[in-house]
Image: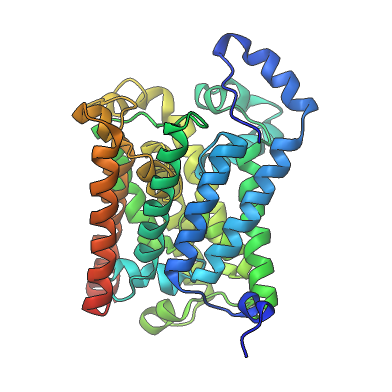
Length: 198
Length: 177
């Protein structure tokens, strides 16, 4: 079984040339995407009605999918990390990025009724509002961000920076001290969803 | 009688089966590709590639595109795969919706104008795309892959994605409609 190889930044050029020769990662990406898209459709998450139903708190399908993915993924990923098979890939963040940016995202999420992953699924599912306005809009929105980036990067995006840390690192405890209670809590939330008839 | 084939041709699976499936997929993605599943940077790369195509390489000068690198990479292929995988599932379960402009929930509140829905989708897309890059991820990269790694930035983002989304959806359907 192939394990991850993290190439240091100094050899990025060498990595880029080898990436051109080795197309296997692209096929694996495509394969993972096909499985992800297949699952998103089967879950109903490629549909506006299901996504906006979640935001209106009338249909809990999206949170059920996300929370069961997170609990499954978390246990397996931390187990593989403990065995030394994988390394985590943690995004850095700040209150500016992850509060303000996420609130802006949330507004778009409700207005569009899809998110970047599920809109790809909605395209495959055939929804024309996703194929036309939705996709064009997302690409345009990311471009506007790219244009504004030089003015944002040292200001609001750095406000309240907390770096690329995880909760176990933040709390300075063994990973499993967080993983186990988090898994139990998520499962209890899912049980509560079912009990409450959500 | 339920056969293996009928499982795949069913339109809907239990959300828990789907979620566990996505969780297992995230294990394989880390193990085989060394990467978490994420999608939104692909839309940014595509925007940069389009700008390059139109202006003959001007996007390459933008600091943001230098940072994310404008190339067809693993994640770009993953997003393409999502389109194909959803198409495949919809096709074999008889749920292809080609021709549907207006989702039924939208139509129930705002009517069946394709033009109106198209423009609102465009506006929503712009806000979503901007917000995704501002937050450094989306419902996949932060909401699933980041939270499952217990990343602080991802939990904060995922919570505020839903706070923003829930408030806005209620304004759209309870105040505007």
